[in-house]
Length: 192
Image 1 (cartoon, rainbow, N blue to C red):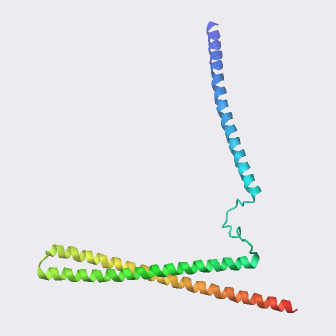
Image 2 (cartoon, one colour; image 1 turned 90 degrees about the horizontal axis):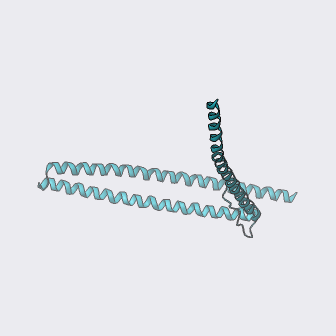
Image 3 (tube, rainbow, N blue to C red; image 1 turned 60 degrees about the horizontal axis):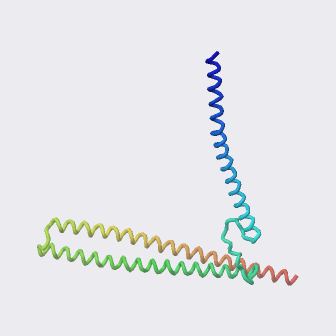
């Protein structure tokens, strides 16, 4: 009977000791929940403020946000002109890049040619060993291989630029044709 009472007292003591720990843990959980709710409330108020100001929280380019005085067709035409100018500038930059690359390749080819001649002269004069000659020749062959790769890259870039220009021109012609057809349709409807 004493053992039962002792066990009961022990269980009661443990239960009483565990209550403050559980209370602390639940307080921590309640605090975390409260902080989470406060954070969500702040986010909601920030979103509401943006909506009240008229800011669009959706994703997009927002090209039409700052139209100024322009509306509809005029804005579209201005935007189209801006994009055309931007494309033309990119094409000019690409052209310059290709031209610079070709000039560098030409310069490198000349440098390789001079180095080959110098290496051959040094070999004939006997001023370098056969081993140094072979190393130099391997080095020049690797440089020539790199130049072949660079030429191929430049060729592909030129072809890509040409293809892009053709596509852009075809698109421009198609757009002009559609605009002309629209104008004719509007004239016909105005006459009726």
